[in-house]
Length: 113
Length: 113
Image: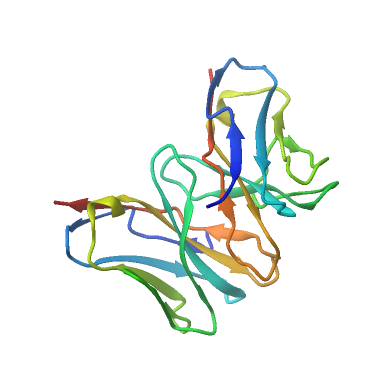
């Protein structure tokens, strides 16, 4: 039973445009959400996070939106740059799970010049 | 910048061999984790530790074992490797429950032939 789902395995966006990566979750006990970025042959690196008490968090070109009623979050990257090409993982922390993170299966983002 | 190191980065071994994947962090983090990821799939937590002499099994059943004799070291061992163990193994660490970010190593790619 997958609690965090990224339904788009891949996304292709033109350089300079907005990239929107989506993530859905089922567990209402998740209280914190994170996005990680992963290049091939490297470990994931933390990108941005949001607490369940907020609906938006912005950091430079990256903005994460949380819709608790829909159990949906999204990552917006604008403007998209070639270096943003990577696999993006959505992760959620279970309030009862003591900082164990549950990850989605990732979305491969390709930025085209 | 996180200081967490994994060795070996890449390994090809024969079926039935014993293998230990090393993970060390120099940040003094109490919490450490092992995740397993197959290509295109989500990261699955297989082991975690909240401190010295503390180890717990994760959400995904694994035939591997771990130990935590020192804060900075969290090795993972497979007593008898099988082709089904072929995967990427990611070690991670974090500070405490109030900080939600976990930091990943670069991963160990294991191929069992």
